[in-house]
Length: 155
Image (tube, rainbow, N blue to C red; front, side, top):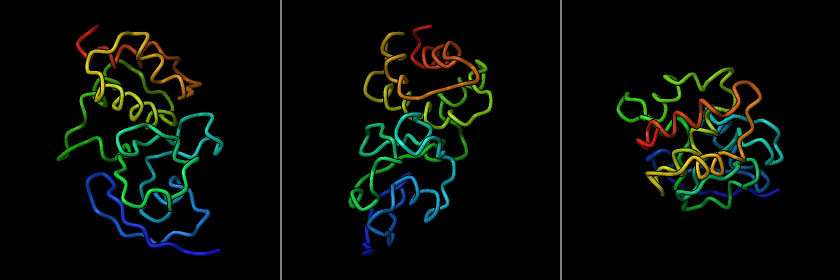
């Protein structure tokens, strides 16, 4: 198995990382960079707990090889807050009670933030479609959708 040296930007910080050929982006984030906010749920791209933004688009980081991310821009849940201030979406999901166990929350936040970045005024259908790849077994989705609508100003 070979190793590769890749350069990428993670949460606004340039990183130089040596990764084995078979290491996933999820493993690299958690094991090499210590960014454990991104969760390992099913490890097969089904649950969305590992969702990160890769070049602005939400992806299941368990399904992407780290070596494929050379030169990429990655945003994890740790990258949503700026200067100690939570992203308005993080604040809204707390206020609406959209968090229970929290395992799915990082992926849902990333999917929702990606939606709001490309569509600041999504419809409820668009919100539900955007988070359809994120499975939550605790809260259901109404409070999560309410949080996204609150940030969008469409509640």
